[in-house]
Length: 527
Ligand SMILES: NC(=O)C1=CN([C@@H]2O[C@H](COP(=O)(O)OP(=O)(O)OC[C@H]3O[C@@H](n4cnc5c(N)ncnc54)[C@H](O)[C@@H]3O)[C@@H](O)[C@H]2O)C=CC1
Ligand SMILES: O=C(O)CCC(=O)C(=O)O
Image 1 (spheres, rainbow, N blue to C red):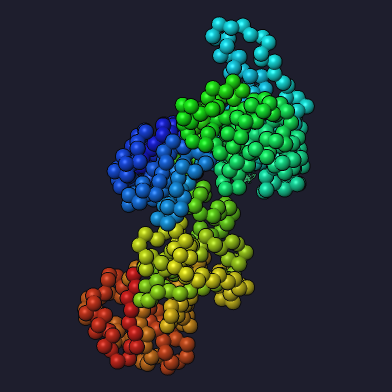
Image 2: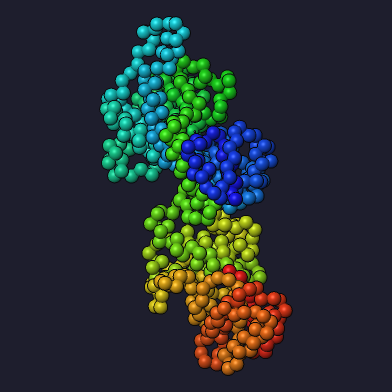
């Protein structure tokens, strides 16, 4: 039974999928401190959060069965990604479900600053009938500058066009072609700051975007500019904004997010009549909360059940077509790594993977992760596909990936060579139509067996009678052989035998086999 901890009031409708799952037990909690979470997290396989709960290194360190942190939303700045990756904990988010909600709040904020609706409301309900103070501006024919043209920024741009605004955009990943399709003129941050009547930011908070709008940008602005931040506190320098309002440059601002949340009681925004604020409500619609909770629940179930998933934040994204092409190979890749990992007793210095046939046309890096995971799990604790490459890198393990043109014999072939200081070992596997996963080469020897169960790998010289001797010895010790494969390069030369055994071969039997003079090496593997 998987135990999932749901925090921060995530929508019950959205997590119905988890309640309905026979293999999942759900606990809902709110407002726990870091210490309280550290105390209970060892019981859980997954934790789901919005933005309120900070999932820190300490919490993840205590979560010894924690496999996934799910963020019901976009921004993952409340989750220590590095700590998660190190521990092989998958972090997933729900990037699409709250785009429209946040875009619509942004527009509400733009219109509220244009017409000072909250300020007018406050006076009116206070008993004043003030029709002079609140003379606003129209949006039509005004210039809006959008910094960050991803999901939300692009939706804001669409709506701004409908309001008759000229749209300027800045995003390092926005091509001229795409900007043109959206009717957006590209500009630099400073360009946009000097031309726009309204500026809205929709980037994540990163080293590059922190204080992207600060004193120098406010100095470039037109008198009467209005500023909106429904993305992340810190993208706009809060103190510089207050100064720009005092200097008469900025006429109004609307903030849903703060450098520190919640803001301190004496935060200068809270009593400034030109600044309107909301408590991080961008994603707070019934629809968005349901969407993100559904998305994150689906992904959490996939991860717990070890099924393929798509929205991991601490792993490179895998496009659906690549995932479809590679998924059938994941188990084979892991088995090849697993087998190879059992062949060595000393540190691995290099893993070389060669893909051929059908596999030359796709980005095989997700499959390489499975192979590396398979190898490393014999050397390190807690390895999985999330942290495999990170662990390999941190141990200076060289991963070489090669692609060669179609294999002569197989339509697809994955060949993996493991190198240590003193030895190297190669295995190759394929997916055979109608037969599934097969190992088809061990070092230079052609073989053909399924990578599963208990295997005995025996090196010997190709002489008559050896197979019989091995069979008799195993039979007399009640060790049943399920399948047997013999591989040799030339008649009478060195050869190998691969036997699938119904159960684990006892140590004393392995020793008796090793004592047979015709055998040069006997090793047991378990896959
Ligand atoms: N107030 C709220 O409740 C919510 C806030 N957000 C926040 O809104 C922001 C945007 O969300 P989405 O549009 O879904 O994300 P997104 O990932 O689709 O878009 C972000 C865009 O920012 C761009 N970007 C990154 N660095 C940049 C830089 N230095 N300069 C200019 N552009 C840069 C990226 O290229 C990307 O196109 C995120 O920070 C997210 O956390 C999202 C949902 C709700
Ligand atoms: O969960 C929330 O309400 C915050 C949403 C948000 O900021 C995000 O998705 O990045």
